[in-house]
Image 1 (cartoon, rainbow, N blue to C red):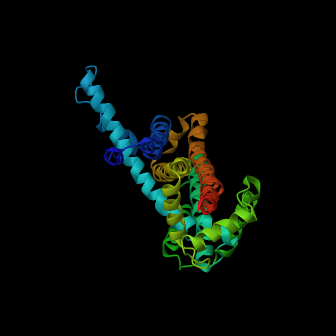
Image 2 (image 1 turned 180 degrees about the vertical axis):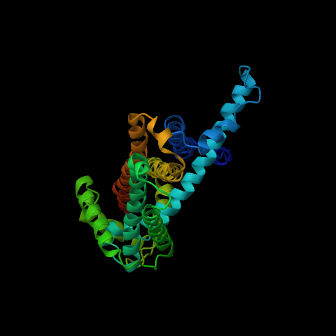
Image 3 (image 1 turned 135 degrees about the vertical axis):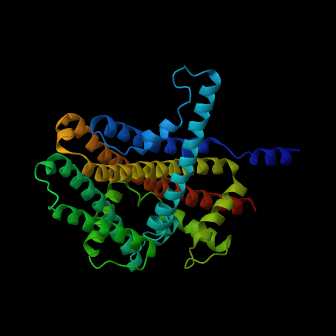
Length: 358
């Protein structure tokens, strides 16, 4: 009877993580893009505002009359469904680019780096780190260039003045090449070396500040390695993803209470990772919107706009970018400093206790 009850509970597809992992990140992306589009339409008279247009499609047909209870419920449920789907898309992008590319290819997974005390320093790793810096610099340059164009270029712009557009085109090409290089893992751009050093230097300083490298004693590491060798029959030289999954299964079998704490850390770092992706995609959306729409405005419409409103709107994308980097750092801190170390400590403790009870 108890097994049937557990089985029926496990079949329920929704839990608290659906709210924190999908609905909130999806809602954050939806809200940040809507705020930007509202500013762009209201302050800058941008012609293309996809989010405003999308919301207009969800308005009831009888706009002249007030919404009844049924229409309100349908509208709210439709909005939640759309946000939930957006959240899943954000989570998929987050898992692929941050977990599979930046962490797996650019770094070792945390458990491996903690045990071996080594940094991943292959050509492929350098390519990922260098391209990460280049791609972000390209987006920032494009945004700043579009801001300059909005601020002063109308007074000097002529149709024969192509150098501005040539500069933007070259910048976009560099950004696309860095993105392709991140996918290929083996395609290394010749100018990446200084950008790789920027990434490594910045990360080493951040590690010193947030303290991700310390915390686990040598004795605990020895016990965990003994657990891998004696219980899981895994060699130290073969630290694949099996180490993580078998350790997780071991904890789930030995201590359901510890799994609850472990699941909580996992939800927290996944929430931070998805939020970072939401803000980052919103930043890319804003940069693209300003870049495309700014060339469709004219000097007359620009001069009629409040400079304060322009400043607020142009700072919004940078705010989204800063928030995405902050949540990315929080993700790494929780993933490396708490989640992975909790797995190591728990396995070491449970294995030692099991040996004492024999």
